[in-house]
Length: 312
Image (cartoon, rainbow, N blue to C red):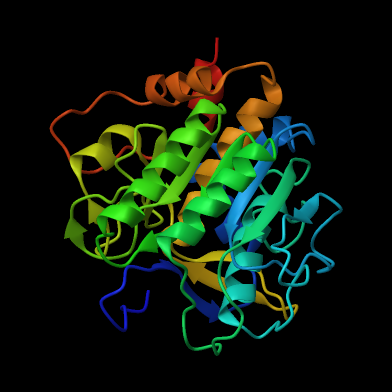
């Protein structure tokens, strides 16, 4: 994640990317680590379960995607990626690949039959090497629009670079309150800054914060830790994750940006099996699937199969 250039509060993607050839065994081990293998064998999701993706635009015409990826585009920009080499397009496509790529592709492809509704907030005007940014107000507006569009889950693979001012904090809290009132679960990357503390996003009671872990389920050294993150959050794979790239290559990526969609995808699969369940019911299953650890700042490892079995 790139540092802020000035004093304004901004949200940036939280991902590290490098070119890599896909290794299916590696990918399978990551899915097994977090209990996704048996759940993915049972279901690929259902179109009635819509996921909102707050990110960059997605190269939806990539052959690795099916027909379940759609865009809730602002009126002032065209749909899809205008600049495929941009960081925003690359970031959005990678995260979308983890969720919605076709099974058998290079990406994890957790829930390809769920509907993915993309709401871009990152601009493609920056160069490939420069991470794009969005304001808290832009992030808040995207959350509200997706909640009003009827999604069940919202994936936010972005983190606030600085502490928001009062106005920005109020806008984000109101947006998250609105999503909760609509029965929407928000899954958010906790950030790749090694510090103690939370943001207005990760401390919200309706949000599931996500930290990145290594292949053995241990939090990465640059994790952002806090008691509230440990109580409501989960650890998910954040190293050597292989996904789709807008230019057609497979890329190896890491960070909380790629960890968050593992949790989002797992919950989407669970919800697909229990489509009449409420958000509160799914949240309780998440809590029951891991032992309560009150005196820690590290959340438990995601166990998707345990969440499924904890549903009533």
